[in-house]
Length: 217
Ligand code: DX5
Ligand code: ZN
Image 1: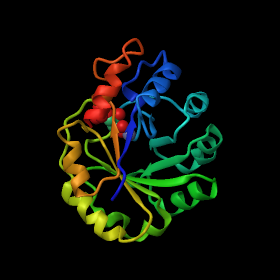
Image 2: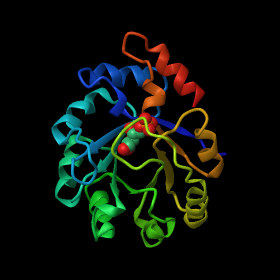
Image 3: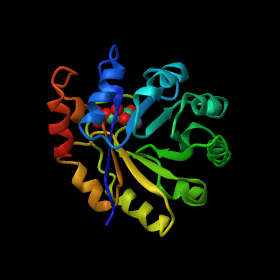
């Protein structure tokens, strides 16, 4: 049996209180902490870069899962390694050489992830599977939290088949809540990223909200 991991996205946290927010979600049982890096170019929103990610690091006692929604990726890989990312995920749509990018991420000592936008087929990663530790299936168009889940169950099932007995996790990201999560888990997802469903109505003053929402997922 697979163990399912919950990876709350701090994109929905209080941006003035990241340390406390990270502690609150870990206290409530987060398995990983998901960090959404956006560049205002690959996606139409801008969040934070390597210095901020480095500042999160001492607060994360689990796994820091960094999702790069940036292009280009390669010039920044070393900076995210130095910032302390455990998993570094790049989009396959971010450039023409995802194979080189995945090699470079592993060479920098991190687990290498590849993310697929909703319009990108499972087959796009067919020749990358031996270089990949995690495939992030986007279930929204990346850029913002709080969007509606796009059903990618067929893609997840196809990836699961393609992965075979390789040690590659499938992560889903976007619109994950107690209703949509089981669909993706049944199709073969291992890691559930959730922003608004975990932080909904939440603040560091009422950490119960995190726990209730996470347990529901
Ligand atoms: C979307 C980000 C997600 C986002 C998910 O561009 O990659 O990680 O925070 O947020 P929700 O769970 O609110 O859809
Ligand atoms: Zn993400």
